[in-house]
Length: 279
Image (tube, rainbow, N blue to C red; front, side):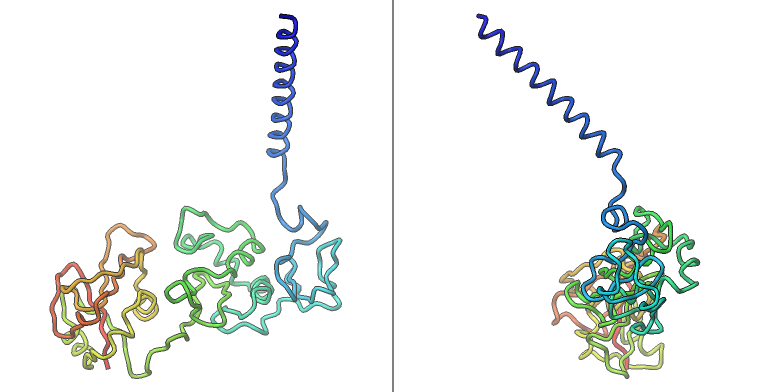
């Protein structure tokens, strides 16, 4: 009986110690600083610690790793290039992440971008909130997103790191023929009629080239809330469907699954606007 009592006492003491340890751990977690390069490793500067060959610090200075002070986290000012846009294009897209961040940090327009109500931490997703400072904007906005891809498995362009308001690179992958125009018809209108209204002719051999949500967005400025792929004889090719009450999107983009359904002449339901290949 005494053994059982001692055993119960030891169990109770062990549980008490465990409870105290857990409480202390929770207190430590709550008190922890946000995990950034500065709070984890460096004393003065935050930087793009994840980049391999070159680094940009939060003053916009770009340097090679051997010119980075691993105590302060800052690039050597005498050896660094500040606000380096040498690998960026006029559309505010760059072919290296660290160059994108450096260029972005020296771009005055960024302050305007950050205050615009339609610019969010994740493009077109208001639930993610707004950027609070230029460093967070530049390091976050320069990362690649689905807006920079075709089919979400290939980049639209080698210059895929963008700091613009809506970070979408130029579409150079699978570029359309120069004489091919992508036109949106009126609701229910056939592509034959839609192209004729623009002084052109519908070219059915090009339906396959434009049957992508990315092409629709790039060439018509229609902002797809959803991208769907359906086999629908009644749409005869890619279409869009407008949705009411959408502040940051226009509606749904639909790709035709069956290529033998493509047709220039078919009128469709007034629920949809056809996307047409016109020459």
